[in-house]
Image (tube, rainbow, N blue to C red; front, side, top):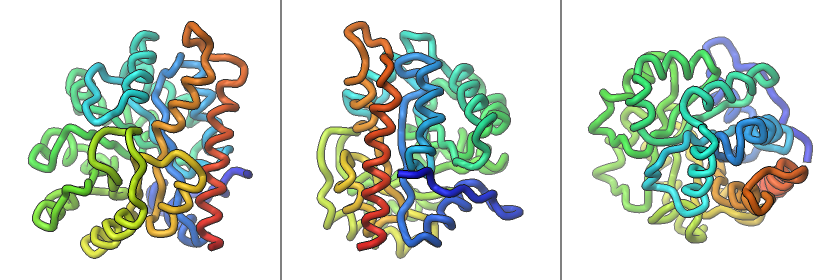
Length: 287
């Protein structure tokens, strides 16, 4: 699997929009990969982040570790604890993105996490530092639309996409509120529950994506429960993007030694799965 071709955004176009435009031109969905910042240590985490686009990721989500990640399953919870044990926090996470940007100016980076670390850091300071580091968008899962004044609207005002999640329980009455200030793309959670705990019903996912598409022109990506290239292909046939997180975090964890330290094959283990996922996305485009 070769790295996706990169194209500089047109004037006034964001990296996120440019990426989805390129994928549409290629007749395929985008592959969005999630890894936890600082897992299992800062330098290994940077190497993984740098390797993801080369392996076929179109957009990267970087997890901001937090002590109480209520939407995440056991795999990502454990990854966050490994990162926190190593001293990973907001400052170090932004620094990793900044270092990533020295060699990659095109791949969108989405920071995904919870509001508490951002609030503690200071919203205005965080937004300014995130932009300076090269972050393109935020997913903050514990801030509903009713709290948009806290972070969503300030982020949008500074040019950071605020990406909202829709779920199987987001009905027609709730959906307009969810979409009102969403930017970049809509993230559809394909299962009820936490990350990495079930396999989605692909037929139901396709129907849900079609329903959301009637309400927005934004790209719709689907995550939670995607583990293999075949899973990615099944989702990619009906969505604009496929998100994979827990499977990558599990592969990384399984590559560590008994003391949870990185080994020589850690980065390669992650990128091998990314190549399989990218092949699945592209296979769906040819189907």
